[in-house]
Image (cartoon, rainbow, N blue to C red):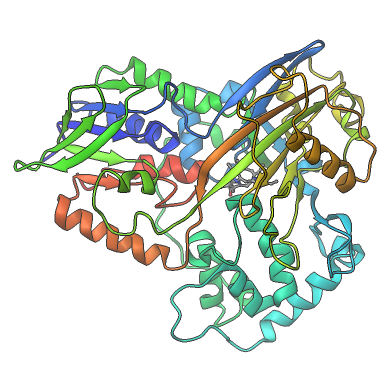
Length: 503
Ligand SMILES: C=Cc1c2[nH]c(c1C)Cc1[nH]c(c(CCC(=O)O)c1C)Cc1[nH]c(c(C)c1CCC(=O)O)Cc1[nH]c(c(C)c1C=C)C2
């Protein structure tokens, strides 16, 4: 029976996408979106700040998208956001130049900011060659060393087996910092990087061989893309003129215009139970309970665990990421090299036990996102001529961190720079090897428990969860979101697009 009333729990990316797609797919059903906070959008938060000579978009969460996610392109088409898209071509510096920062204390010979080679020529000239080249050249000739009895393992164990420990720590841990903000020794390779896990199988033990062989064609999903693919030709990454919140705000506006959608903000959920007639009752704090024929939970799994008894909801520990935006009144050329930014690998001795700045990486936002800032730089040469530079430092994850000021703040609200921000700035000067000017603006965001670390065995656990949802809840309760499927913006939108297919 098609759903009569669908409750979508959680108004972040997955919740908004679920409500948007379900309300279109079931136009005769009522969709109620319930969100604890007074705003929708979850971790997607963009803010335009006003400085004496212009305005700048700052992001707290995801800031750019890759064009390979068709579910996001479809939303851009359906929500008519094409004119607000800003793109970075594949040939531009931020697409090509990505860096690692290797501290002088590291055991590998290269130190400082090192460009990650993107071609054989650049590899041969890179001080990183001694870590990269022998590891990659030897890998196809190493014996198949995946133990027969393992179904999954950590990213670090996987890369160490195939490329050696130094490669795994230098590149693997940095990659994992930049996506999951976690320790690569804990993250499941099969859940986080399924294509690499499959490549090893295809290459009969060798990842390199596996990537050289054709992979099985997968059944193509159909998307309503309009002309978005044309717009994305030769694009490396993209965003929106007013930041990523454009996407979540447009979904919210579309839901507000829909006759069959109701949005309940500032509404906490205190319970969830299946009733005799198979409908589901959602208990709300300070409001009448809600009855639904079907429920989509996009809540973080540990939060759902407080509402209902289901297996594996607390298996994955979440990472907290502190994000600090800086604006300097100087062109990017005076602050940093041209490029996307840099990632920092795990220290050779592991993460410290005492609080530290804990920098995972820094994004050179002006390079990819200068089109968000006003006034626009005359001519194309923003790198040499823009009057301002904006960049973002990402900290936390597996690093223990010092306490934050009680009130999260920015240079607008606080006269003095907190010690934490000062320590980041000192570290930034060391890492860039430059005597930087004082920033004219800074802003702290604390993304508390924002990304789950999917521990090995995650995919099997999620299969078991699905089985229980089918047997005990008749598949009327769907559990989706970053803690179940992938953590990227595209994964969250896709999860919302697919939910309810079996209803
Ligand atoms: C709040 C910080 C976040 C960190 N990772 C993510 C967030 C939201 C999630 C994430 N970041 C990336 C991906 C892969 C995207 C894909 O399409 O494959 C995901 C799921 C890649 C990425 N990492 C950084 C940037 C700017 C991007 C591009 C996408 C985006 O804007 O999020 C930089 C970065 N992110 C984090 C750290 C520690 C870091 C360091 C420089 C954590």
